[in-house]
Length: 199
Image (cartoon, rainbow, N blue to C red; front, side):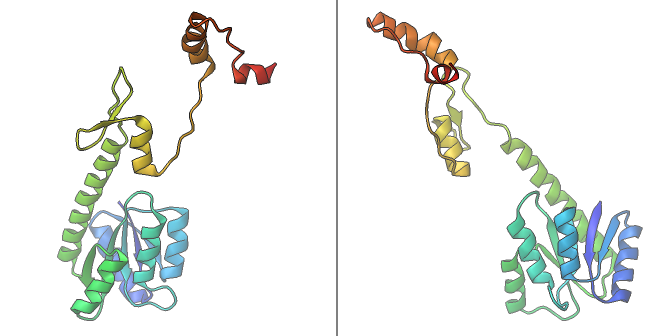
């Protein structure tokens, strides 16, 4: 798995990179938060292991930017050389950090954290795939939500995306549905608006 490592200390970066390679991963090294952010924008990865305190863009701000960007979920592990207190942990959690490791990083702890990361990322992918299927009634075209409630497709999509809909009649439905209804009512139907514009 490709893992973005963010560490401004060259020796710590080399140790972390060697540990990740030993565990069978492909580290992508960034010397600071700003370089990491630029690399992530170009080629997002699913796991980031970042130092907390760095000049310029620190680990928390990097995490905030990744969370704000959206897209596929990225598991974020924060490294710290100092013992974390409750206040610091809350700051990190608020920024979107998933896990913590103390420096120097121990191989067995890193292995466990990455195992959890892979499991969560697999679940995240499965959820995205399941959410990409929309249960649609073959007859009335209503959609079933996760509470087993059937609603119009417009309502369903609006509740998930905020999209608004305008309504009209396509030429096929105009000819198949409206023209016979108008003629049955004794009214000669005008040409469909789309067809009229083409002429």
